Image 1 (tube, rainbow, N blue to C red):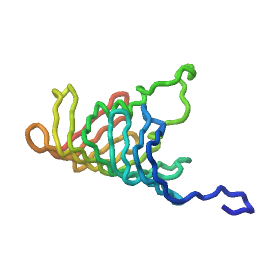
Image 2 (cartoon, rainbow, N blue to C red):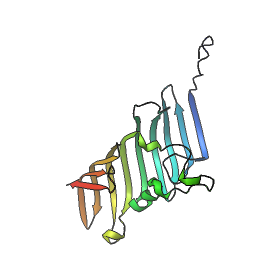
Image 3 (cartoon, rainbow, N blue to C red):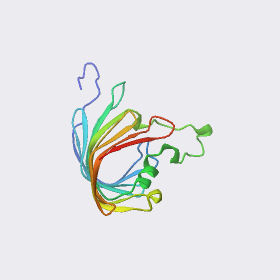
Length: 189
C-alpha cells in the first residue's frame, strides 16, 4: 500500500494447502481440505485442484470467491465440483443452519459470525458418479449425475440436469425455493 496514507498491504501469490481445517459461517460442520492450490490476486481467491470433505461429503475441483464480501453487493462465487456420491440428506446435514452445534457459552442461541450464504450468489457445475435419493423415494440410487447450478436469494436453480435413474435416463431443470417457511420445488423435463 501507499506509505503516506497507511493503506492496507496487498497480499498476492499462491499457496499449497495440506490438511487444513476451515470453519465456514453458514456450514454446520468444518471443511477439511486434504490438498489444494490457492491463488490470491487483488480481488479474488481461487482454489484449484482441491480435495476436501465437509461432514460426510467428499468433493474435488475448483472454486473462486471474492476476497471480501462486505457492503450491500452480493458475494459472487463460482464452482466446478465433483463427488463420488451425491446424497441430498448428507448435503442437508452440512447446509442446514439448524443442525449447527453451538457452544455452551452462546446463551440464548446467539452465535458468533454471520451466515456466508445470506449474500452468496454462486454458480457453476457439479457432477457425481453416483446419486442417492433418500427414503422418501425408496432409497433410489442412480449414476452419472451432472448439473449446472445457480444460487441467489435463497433460490437454487439446476439447469441441464441429467442422471441415469429409475431404470432410464432423466433430464430437466429444477427450481428449489427456500425463501418461505417450507421449501417449494418446480421441475420440468
